[in-house]
Amino acid sequence: MSLGFTRELTSIQPEIVFSIGNFGIANSTLMILLMAIMFLCLGIFSIRKFTLIPGKFQAGFEMVYESILGLVVQITGNKKQAEKIFPIIGTILVYFSIANVIALIPGLTDITYAGTAIFRTPTSDINTALGVSIAAVIALNLVSLKEWGTMEYIGLYLPIKNVFKGFKKSFMDGFVAMVDVFVGVLNIIGELAKIISLSFRLFGNVYAGQVLAIIIMGAFAYVLPTIWTLMSGFTGLLQGMVFASLVAVYYSLSLKPQEDSSE
Amino acid sequence: MEVLTNIGFDWQVALANFINFMIILFIMKKYVFGPTGAVIKKRQEKIQEGIDNAKNSESELLVAKQKSEEELKKARNEANQIIAKAKENGDDLVARAQKEADGKVDEVMAQAQKNIEKQKEQMETELLEKTAGLVTLGVSKILNEDIDNTKNESISKRALEALKQS
Image (cartoon, rainbow over all chains, first blue to last red; front, side, top):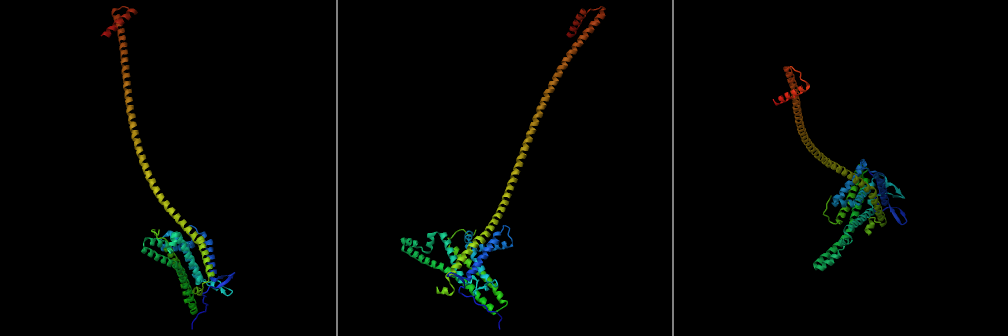
């Protein structure tokens, strides 16, 4: 005999709460909107009042800010570049860290509308991870385009100019340049692979964690669910950090190599 | 695509979540990270300013100390020079005064000598006159005769001349 309670497994499909015309609004979208409102409130009602002499909350928040910045500096190896991409990396980290743990607020995911939960852990929906991954890869390519210039940026993926130059020199050089073209095509595929790897890694981890949580909560009513919930929170933060770190690494790889290091 | 649909891909939801993420990115940049970064930067600038000011004050203090020492040295030199000059002037003045006093003393002495000589001469003359008178008186007594004024004068004159010659 085992003690426990039954709970429905979160659907892998997006759960549409209502539709605006033909456009379905999923519960993960609503949760992200709730988070956006929370961030906006935090910014307007608290961060706007930050002063030069910090209080406890400000000191804590600044510590988090500087830790994230330090992480980005460590990954990119350059403070100036780190400051450039900090908003996107910081947002991804905070966004996923909160998104992964917000559903732990008791009762939040139990509010329903027409039999469908209004809120759901956003990252347990593949569409959230995909949306953010696409945004991150687009941002990275825009930064890369700005860094290299249009022609050089195109040359990274399709170095056709080098083929002509190579064949003008010698057949061997031309052949090597052809290999570079194939490598360029692989780079394009690599960009798509980045989107897939980033989103699937996150989605897989978070969804698997939720499935495991349901199983554990179904089997044990006491002690273990608490430990598992705490661990879920930790894993959620970790996943956010992994995602943000990977984006920062992709960013530093897309930049021109520089002599200057962390200053 | 079928694999994606099987794991819940829906382009509408993906688009909505993408837009929502962009909204969150905007909010975080404008209202969260922006102001926090600005406060931290401002504080760092203020701290740096304080450190710079302290460093400047230290160097200014050092410069002021050096300057004051130089001024003191200069003032001491000037004072010494003034004292030396004053002493020189004083010595000059004393020497001049001494010289003047010496001159005056000589002058006074000469004048006194002159006066003495004059008085001596006068006294001699007077003495001779009186002696001549006495001679005349003696002569008249010896001769027992009255000598009138004219005779008296001539005898006196002769006696005086005789005395002068002697």
